[in-house]
Image 1 (cartoon, rainbow over the protein chains, first blue to last red):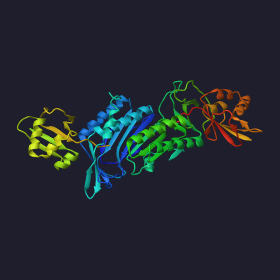
Image 2 (image 1 turned 30 degrees about the horizontal axis):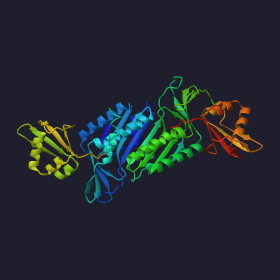
Image 3 (image 1 turned 90 degrees about the horizontal axis):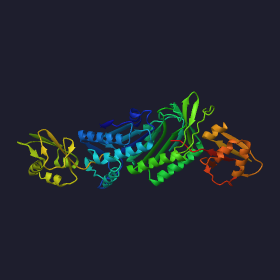
Image 4 (image 1 turned 180 degrees about the vertical axis):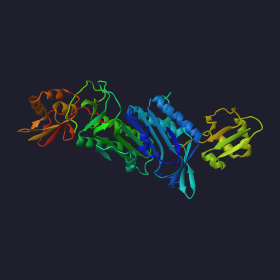
Length: 153
Length: 153
Length: 84
Length: 84
């Protein structure tokens, strides 16, 4: 299940939507808007998330399919918010479900790592007074992705 | 926050209880009762979880403290159920909260791995007709199938 | 023929618009499109010189400058992504 | 002096009880306690021979056979854990 949405979501409800007695293990990753400083040392007030929706959906489907196949998952849910978000709000949720924990945990990390460098979302810091700042991609995210090269076909 | 409880729990509520704008990343591990076969190939109907509560609490505190210190987490929540659980029910929840995702994910896996081998909980498969089977720690040899009665309150 | 261009993130901000619909008399290549765009607005020079920008033609990344563009194609200009 | 024994998992099942309160006239070691228990119930022989069983004295694991036990001590006999 993949969703790109302006709305927030409830963790319990999303869990129930994919839960099944075949799953002994669920791994979740939840990203949220962190209170941070802008590059000009201003306190951020929130973020704005831009998205190329058709492409992002296609990219997320591909990542999900890879995770399901490679780790033989029973389920994989990905939700990503777009639009304006306040501090503390949920941005992204990944849930992987498997019989066993190691697979669920590893696959969940793969999904969020892939999403960070391969899916058409862009973050802006909102600084108040209509001021915005583009968030730049972290070098470390690209490097981290290299570790999956040997694991995934 | 550490809880050992007979009651189930709501993921959204537990998340809210530890969420803060300092956290950009939360990693969750959720263990659940999986539909499985007993060692004698019978379908399990549920599980019973026994616990040495005073010891388990002390052990969980130690693991939590280690995770908080080692990965500089902002929070770490551990909930473990005890008593009788049906198929599909939640057994254990670990949530780690950090500024950055790699720390949260790694610490969460550490906590659940430690819990599996170092905390005083014991699982029994419930097979119906008052039949029970002790679940053995993985890799341990020898099967200790036991039929017994007056164990579950 | 028509090509739809889609702009995201800093490219959208720089160009002050999210898309363009451009008409050509005949089929052109991606390379020819680039030259055409730079001639209209020098901001495109900066965009095309940035090696981190990716180009997606109808949702598939393109690498070949000589890629032919067809009527109705959607070409998106994407800075490095920062979601999650 | 009194020692409280706590049994878990298959040990509890085998002994058909979850705990015991045992009185001794004088301080004893863990080793002496073991001998005493085996003399009362041969099931303890099997327990003490199982190298996977752990012993916790007042919530701290003990490894030393010569560990002295004191009045009010709680000694728990724990098979390998299987929570999570």
